[in-house]
Amino acid sequence: MTPAVPPPPDATLESALYASDLAAAEAFYGGVIGLGIITRQPGRHVFFRVGASVLLVFDPEATRRPPGPGASLPVPPHGGDGAGHYCFAVPEAELDGWRDHLTRAGIAIEADFRWPGGARSLYVRDPAGNSVEFADPALWS
Image 1: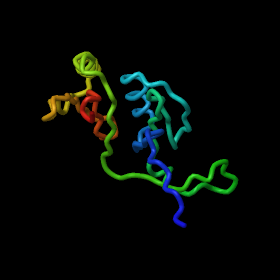
Image 2: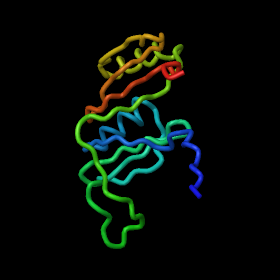
Image 3: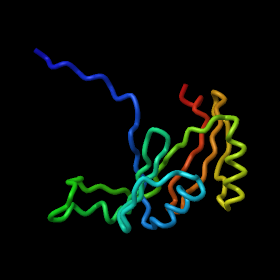
Image 4: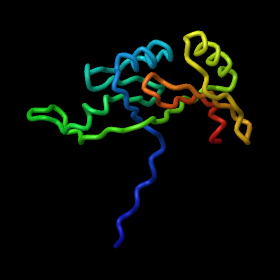
């Protein structure tokens, strides 16, 4: 008898980006974007609340090392090289406000365009060089 296949997941609980300068990441995601901080461990990570999900920002060098003796959590080592990508769902009516806010904060708008289906996306870079998108959720409907 073949075991039953479970249903596919229906949401993303957390996503990770990597940044060696966690203070700059915290200033960008917490200060400019306005995300609430869930927790931080200096030199290792800072975690942000994004609606019902979580954005994890890790220092890649710190998370490549396996947990040491007596570590409270046995999280496997991980890390990333190069620019990652994260996309915030932003209603179409709020995208101009985000564009203005980001520009006032000194964040360069890398791209602002409409996809073939009509949804609009704004792209910027975080201080670590990750591509950060603000997109109308209709992009994937």
